[in-house]
Image (cartoon, rainbow, N blue to C red; front, side, top):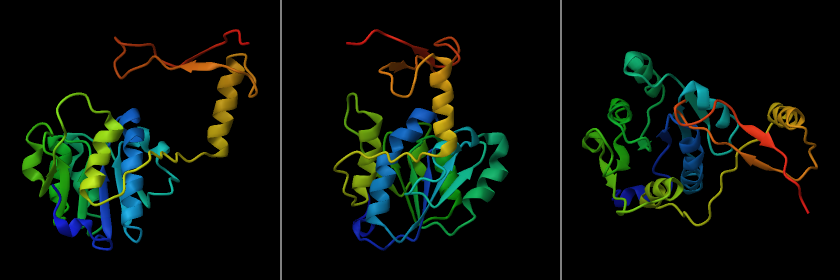
Length: 211
């Protein structure tokens, strides 16, 4: 569990969230980061994410800086330079891989927290480890356990994904391509995954009779 001192508000001024991928996981981590923001309102929160998922975080009310860099061993120099931009005093590793743990260690932050069951030996690089109970635990709840270990209030689940005129225009375009109006009743199924062998390449809009 996290040290008692992590439960006192105001201790941390520079917080780094490491959750580079993938899209669904980044979204699932938002409630935990929102809880961290409420616990440490004066802190600067930076989030390291892959460039392809950075758009979902830009403009988010809980995040001060989006660090968008390739998350590959071949880019290790760029990654280390990115995480040394600020004197981080808390690293929250929600990825739980050797790369993410090593990056957290490279910041020199005195507190580095992650899951006790993280893979590839990642826990060796943490100062504080958060256990997760056996069985199926939803990603949102798993990430919130880290926030709770930091003394955060994790009641309620809030994503607060920012919107923009560009996002709205893309939605209207997709609706139009599917033969739907903004006032239509419809269901959206997104049967896709990371690997082409598991799904198609893009979402499909389909109209069903209503009433």
